[in-house]
Image (tube, rainbow, N blue to C red; front, side):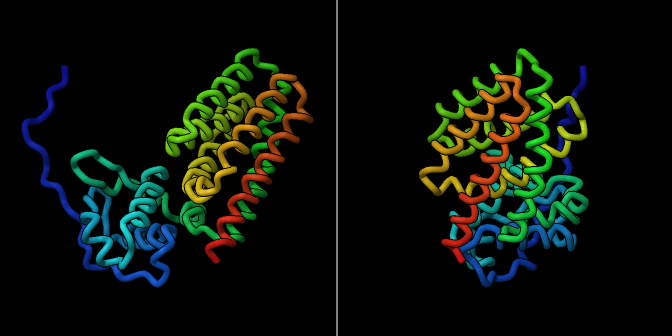
Length: 250
């Protein structure tokens, strides 16, 4: 049996000294980018507890709701760990994670969105086609159950999003290619950051359910062509919904 030590090392709280007011304070992604930069420049280090919400809203010059949305995005991405009753901490390995494509994924913009849609079309339509061709007897029932669970969670955004991510990852698993699955998980983490934006649209939930059901039914039929078609339509429509949000905030 392992015994935990009776004492813990002293915790370090990240300094708010380098936090500057933001020009676009109403946009959570601007806060995400600013926090990412603090981590990349090592102003905030792995293991640091980030400053209290009140101090950050004052330093950034932002509202609490925008700050909370930004922090939640970073929690989803695995950059920040939220510890209930204890605060939020910078996770280990974030400097590497925030480089290159990962940092790109934090910047919400039309060009990035179009690139993501193109990448999803290449990867996820192929996964759907392969999953249908594999005719795994357990896959379609599992996907249909997830759609039912999503329907029950329409008023719980975080749970709805997790189930949505799980749906896509399960299809990637059904494609029977470990690299596809790894890439799909990365893409779903990026989708998770942006998803909160489209959830503002009332039609997002019902449309997502309809589109996921069509994908599951196509895979159930064993038709690679229909599965690819259903997935492509879903990805395109999801991109269009996010474009609507971006245009409204331009």
